[in-house]
Structures are given as C-alpha cells and as structure tokens.
Image (cartoon, rainbow over all chains, first blue to last red):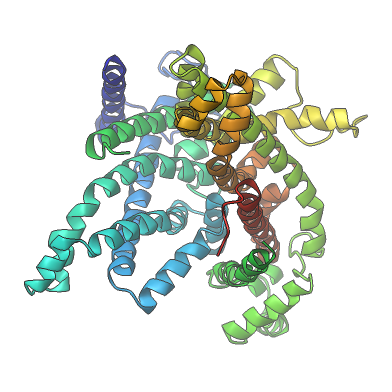
Length: 272
Length: 316
C-alpha cells in the first residue's frame, strides 16, 4: 500500500513537471525571455548563473534558457505529433486487418513484418536519407517506423473481440459493420491504446532528438533539444553545460512521461 | 530440427525480398536526382541525360530494382559517389568495428542484466532491487547520445582515465589493451538501456519461477540455494530472456549509429550518417542493407536458440 502511495506521489510530481514544461512551451512567446536566435558573440559560452543569462549562453552567445524553452515547443510537438500520427495509422490498419480477413489483412501484416525486420532507428534514418534531412521529414520517418506496434496491438484485440457474444448478438440484430466497429469494437481499444500512446510520446521525443543529434532532424538556427546537443558537443571541454542542459531537459521530460504513462496503465489497465 | 531449420531458412526469403524492396524504394523514390548530385549544379542537360542513361535511371522502377538485386546478390553494391570506391569494400571495412561494438554491448547488457535481475529476484524489495528499479526507469528515459557525452566528460575529460574517441590511439596503439581502453565507454553507453530492460525482465520471470512447486521440491530435497536458483530457476527463465536479448540486439545495432557518432567509432553507423549528409545513396543503401541483414540473421539465431534451450518446442 505504502509503495503504491509513493508511486502515485511520484507520478503526481511527474505530472506537475510535465504540465509546467508544456505550459512554458505554449507560453514561450509571452514569457520575459531573450530572443532565442539573437547572436551575441561577445557573451559566448557564458556559464550558468551569469548576469542576464540564468542558464548561460551557447557558442553564439544565444541565451540557453530561452533556447531550451523554445526548443521544448519543437521537441514536445514533434514527439506528440509523431506518436499521434503513428497511432492513427496503426489503429486504422489494425482495426481493418483484424476485422476484415482476406488480402488486405495479408498485405497489412506482411508490411508490418517487413517494417519490423529493421532496427527501429535504422529504418527512420534510411527514410530520412531518402526524403532529405529536416524536421518534417524526420517526423514522417518516425511515424512510419512507429505505426506497426499499434497495428499489432490493435489487431490482436480486435481479433479477440470479433468473436465475442456481444458482437455476434449485435450482428444477429442486424447491425452494420460500421455500427459494430464504432459502438462495440473501438471502445474496447481505448484504454490499451491510450496507455501505449502515453508511453510512446517519450520514445518519439527520444527518436526525434536522436535524428536531430545526427544532423538529420531540425536544421539551424531553429532550436530543438537534440540539435542543441549536437552543436554544443564541440564545446564540451570549454563549457559542458551547453551539452548537459539540453540532454537533461530530454531526460527529465521523457522520465516524467514514462512515470505518468506507468501510472495511467495502473489506472486504466490494472491487469498488466 | 533439421526440417525446422530448412523451413526457417526458407522463410528468410520473403523477409530478405521485403527488406531489399524497402531499402531500394526508400532511396529511389527520394526527391534528389543522383545524376545531378554526381555531376553538380554546373552540368548541362545533355550530360545529365547521358549519366541517367548510363546509371539506368531512365528505365522503369521494377527493371532498376531487379538489376540492383542481381548486382547485390553478386556482392556488387555499387560505387560510393563520395569516396569513389566500391561500397562493399568500404562497408565491410567498417563492419568489423560495428560488430566489435555491438557484440561487446550485447555481452555486457546480457551478462549484467541477468546478474542484476537474478540478484533482485532472489531478494525482492531489497536495496539492490529498488536501486535496479530506479536505474531501469532512468535507463529507459535517457538519450543514449547524451549518456555517451556525460560519460565522456566524466571519464575522459575530468578524470582522464579513458580515451574520449576513436577505436585506436593515433600513435603507439594497435594492441588489444588499446582497443579495450577505447571500447569501454562506447560499449557501456550502448549497453546501458538494454541492460536495464534485460534486468527487469529477468527479475519478473525469475520471481515467477522461484514461486513454483518444483522449486519448493528442489529446496525440500536439500539442494543448495545456488543450484536451485541457477540450475532449476535460471535455466527455465532463459526462453523469455533470450527473446528480449534478440530484440535488444536489434536496438543495439540501431543504437550503434548514435554511439558511433558520439565516440567517432569507425563503424558502419558513422559511415552511414556521413553518407547521408554527403547524399551518397549507394553508400547509404549498402550500410542499411548490411545492418538489416545482420538483424535478420540475429532473429534467426534467436529462433534456433529456442529449440536448443527448450526441447519441448517441436516447431511443427
């Protein structure tokens, strides 16, 4: 009991951190922050707690706090949007292949098999190689690589629900496929998909940051946490904070997302 | 077992075809024109057209694919546009470094993960168990490239214990000691996340198994605890562990791209990233193909290991 209470406290703390970061990211234009792209070479690589720059400055003298907050907008949005896109594609294909058997099922399942025959990040990198570096293309790549997990999850549930009595009964009463799907099958998917999604946003933030770190995601001068890490890397000897801070930001936000996701799973899906 | 092996090898064919189609399509449907990239923006229309014909880019896509596959099957992965050398030579050259790194990462994460998992399961809710739970949460949330940089800052820059990058010392190195010294930080970085996942899975599987009746019987017979845990417990827990180790091997191959970039480790991953930034399609294609093939073979090996570990699996 006490362990559960401690876990809930931790999840609550994570939720507060998450809400704070999301709020700061949304309100970034209205916060009293320096311009994130203004270059000030005289004040380059200032340490933490410098006057006017609470978290110091980067190699171009740009305010790190401001870049971290503006970077949160890009990183959070990219993570949430790619996870949402992967979920949407995955759920539609999963429902389709689970409910209707025949060639669409075969095609969809073989496609997911092939996509899963690649290491996750490798395929994303290969797709970005084809589409060309950039945040939009990196997001497309990660969404493509991410949907098969949802397809498999959803297909499994639909397959098990399809033969249950209440679906048979609905069919016997003359319900159309559309009605059965919307009223009886989709509600069964809600909690597992919400849980998977909440845990996936963090993974997608890590993946986008990874691509940006390799120079394949966000392009300068736009700041996201991954690209800040990549450019700051050259100055790690002189000013480790330029690299440590964006990494810490990614770490804290993904940790918070994982904690909230875990708590959500305990709440929505107590069997697992 | 022999017929299972034959069937499993036969099943490789559609997977390999699928992998090759994806690798081919990803780079051939891309917006860039290889002829323009090779000749630069100064090239005339006639030159571009001639090169496109020479490269076979004017032919239908399926003809291009079949020709590419027939070349690949004969070990010809084309020539790198950037290095002006055969892609296969360059990729194989770097492949050894990637294998050394990935294999060390896998070994470290498997041995460390199993040891930590067993120790946590034998004494659940102990200090070690709780520390391992916290570490696994951290491991799943930490960007691998950031962990690499943090380790590099601490152990190379501040403490000066280990070299910061590369695979060999520029001067006077070249022996096993030199290689190991360079390998420690990248291997630990790569292994960290997988180690925590393997540890958590080993813990939960072992907890499940240690509460079974036959374990109680083994203890009642008077067997020493070590024998109960390892011989009766761990051996039966190995099937799910092998599954997750196989999955982790794939993650490690992918993670190697990031780790190699952080530590300038001269592997296929670093080569691939350099190839992408130089828009060198044949090189990227070769790198992706080689890593994907390795992944497919690892999955095959994991499937075969099941049969070895659990004779009840008949694969009918």
